[in-house]
Image (cartoon, rainbow, N blue to C red; front, side, top):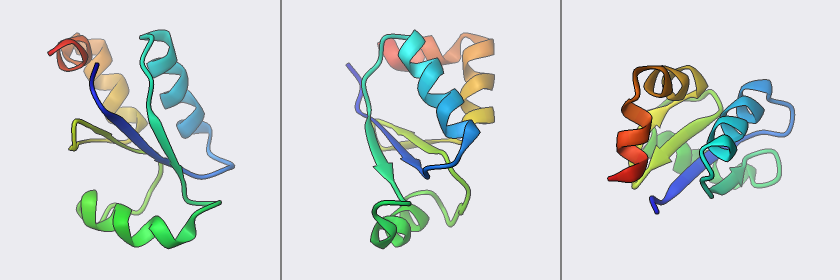
Length: 85
């Protein structure tokens, strides 16, 4: 099973959409909630090439991006390949 990490904030509809998509794929992930852990924001910026929006999704330490990027991978079928590799 891949290692999935998601940087989120409390009030974030796209975070919810990303988690719902991954839940539908029967995946588990580590959620790093920046609302509760603001000290980890700098970590996200370093790992995500300075991207400041949430969610930021990493699979096996590779930056996937935000919800739109995740949904596009899902639409193309590429997400299943990534999750099953």
